[in-house]
Amino acid sequence: MPRLLLSLLMLALAAGFAPAAAGNGLPAQPVNLRPEITVEDAVLRLGDLFDGLDARADVAVARAPAPGRQLRLSGQWLRRLARAHNLAWQPGPGNGSALVRRASQVVGPDQIVDAIARSLGREGIGGDLDVILDSPGLALHLPVDSPPEIEVAALTYDPRSERVAAKILVGGADAARAQTVVRGRALRMTEVPVLRHRLARDQVIAPEDLEWIRIPLARLGRGTVTDPAEIVGKSLRRAQRPGRQLRDSDLQAPVVVTKNSLVTLRLETPNLRLSLQGRALDSGGLGEVIRVVNTKSNTLIHARISGPNSVVVVADRLAGAAQQEALR
Image (tube, rainbow, N blue to C red; front, side, top):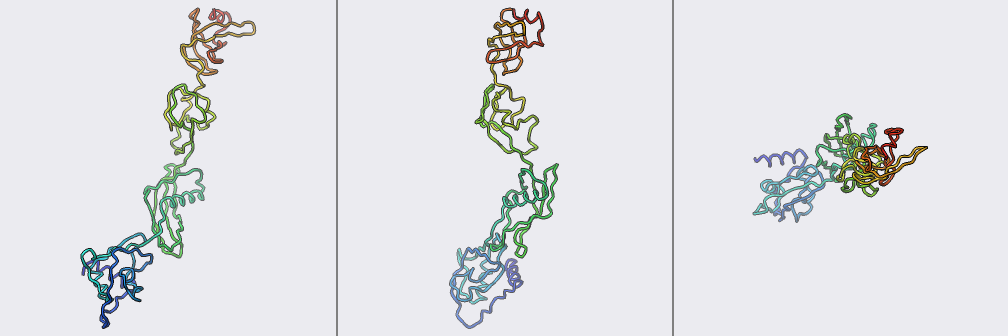
């Protein structure tokens, strides 16, 4: 006896489904095979397989496949089944087998991820978490009439590696349940402001130039600026591409004096006020100290930027008569 036929007969007997006797003296009932069948119940009935049946349509003949699974019934098995129930059917070309599918309701990865995240929260592992399964296509199938309840058991979490594992059970406690063990990562997340589009060097950053992105906390770089108030109004020391974390070293005060530009150089003390023309040897923003050369005496002076193309001599870099000499 072929292995598939033997398995199906054993399955039918185990389920308490005995084939009816064919020798009842009545003519065989003509029927048509349904080549593809979808069932919802846990049992397979004659009426699922054949059209044109009378009251025998509800006779159970075997167990149905598990929810979400399918089973192909061979023509040989179907012929024996038809003969046992006195049905006039023979396999023919293109009509020799039947594919039986079991309908199901699917509990997918998103629902499993949400259940794990909630369980982590109940364990005191809160905050903004992203749970990422090692098997992102995981799905559990339940009978269509089972409640899609999810239970998370045997939950473990390693905060150093951010690895998580759990046993997942779906379906009500009194219903057929599906279960599996899942593993993955539970990443602690944070939000950071980044550039929405590319900006050039020395370009001043406006609020509309920024957007927020979520990243794993472990990927937050040292020196990354997370407060947009510390970014808006600053200019870039070098061109930056969109989506990149901005560090302190990427930002500077808006450039109001550019390198090699002419500036008004002033020295102000309680007893003295001098001004003359200089040339900036550096670019800089308001309040920054840059090097300036006196265009008349060619003397190098350190000066603090006080406004557009305006600098003030840094008093502690030049004292007394030296201040006046440098400005002549």
